[in-house]
Image (tube, rainbow, N blue to C red):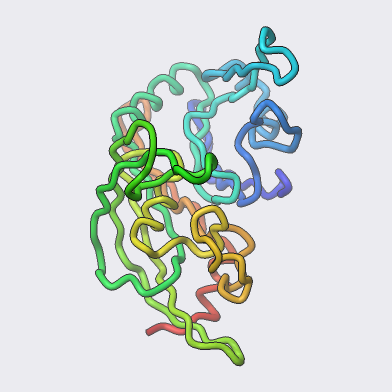
Length: 261
């Protein structure tokens, strides 16, 4: 994904809010080399270099050597294939200020997703702790048998629409357009909780299993159908702001071909 697809939603002296495109990783993992959001930050806002908290990891070839991974201005992350609103700190003062808001769960995050199947309840709360998957080191789990420390995770949801789709020669498939509002910020929380509901996110190959491997089930998506739609937080003066990232074209395309039920 090209960094040129990054949209600036708002910028001021303390922070920048962007719309991250799906397919762009936020920062390097210290192993692979590919374009990152941090590269874009350093190119367009070089003064942010040094703001925040860099990350160090052991070198694969020499455990006595530490590799430093720059995370300039990065307070929170979105998965590579999740699009949407992110805030980037421009100063250390604001970084520390908003980091505390994230830690205290006062930052309000709203995600939009399309999931497989018909979610029956119009709204609800998923209160299911998350641990490591026993079968795949890449995954997290809220299912019985999850390993390691189980961390509390709470997600509110509200159905935005229910749809069906009939491809030529196939049976009718059902989908739900849904809004998620996580109280906590666990890794992959929304994706894990969607699976816990038995309604995994469309095209989420890590959590949806075999259904996502059939492109005919994915209504045009080539990555998980998850978008960080809105982000709300307080500025240094105590004024609350909400920023929204426009719904991406792949969501518009999917919703256009689905039939409301």
